[in-house]
Amino acid sequence: MTAVDLGIPLVRRTTDTSARPDTTRLVDRFGRIATDLRVSLIDKCNLRCTYCMPAEGLPWLKRAELLDTEEMNRLIRIAVEELGVTTVRFTGGEPLLRQDLVDIIAATAALPSRPTTSLTTNGINLGGFAEPLVRAGLNRVNVSLDTLDRDVFKQLTRRDRLDDVLAGLAAAKEMRLEPVKVNAVLMRGINDHEAGDLLRFCIERGYQLRFIEQMPLDAQHEWDRGQMITAEEILERLGSEFALTPDVAERGSAPAERWLVDGGPATVGVIASVTRPFCAACDRTRLTADGQLRSCLFSTTETDLRGPMRAGAEDAELIRLWQETMWAKAAGHGMDSGEFAQPSRPMSAIGG
Image (tube, rainbow, N blue to C red):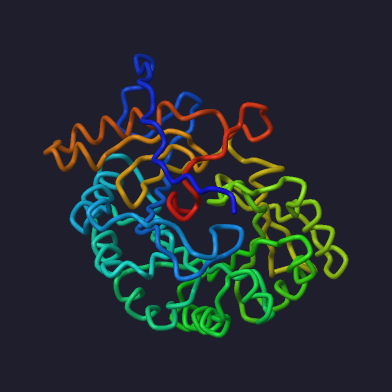
């Protein structure tokens, strides 16, 4: 098995901010403004998806390394009330494994400038959490589901939990955590024949399906672009079973390109991070479970907020660090560049 490097990336280099506009918002040098905060609450997961981590799992962060409830709430408050964030998505790892998840969501929903909140989950524990999540103020969920075949699910996730995921989806729909979005990754020779079945399943139940190109964020660093099912291939497979027409609705900064299915109103989305990057419209800023800021999913550097915060930093200092980090954001992930380097931390540690 390929060695797994989970070292935290180097702290970003100091960036000249003399040209930065006099604004509290999270602007960068290319005119983008980050209003969407992705918060990774935990790096642990109760699945072992083959495209994410090895069968034995990973060396998880120690409890003392994780931001505690108060620290997490403080940074989210700063992002929303001071830096102009309007959308907060909680991710992992598997965020439903974090014991204070409901409390963190409730604190976020109670902020005066209440942001829209969402949760990305594998769905295993969602059936038992849907109701308390709604009470806490969560608006919607994204659930990962790559297959409807029990044997393929076991092969991909190394766990026999398909029924739990399906129950979690149904509970989210019942509790009106809508739109209920389903994220699917097609793997060549494993589940790529299920594109049509997944779309029919979602349309019949009122879920919104989005296919995601497999990205180079696996802990094993075994991602192979030649083996990736591209957006073009996904659309070809769907086009053989459905009539797809481009959705003319404004895409904005949404990562998914959308198509009407058989004339609508049902739609299907494709997130083509690799072959059709949408970096120019990116509005995301990222906070890891251990208090590191990332300006991009594929950043190779991070800015530490946990250290200064635990050393007694005032809000103004944390705001400055956050603003400087986003000002230094690159124009794009550079995946088509010969200099592209996969992040040392995997998706489970970065957050989706």
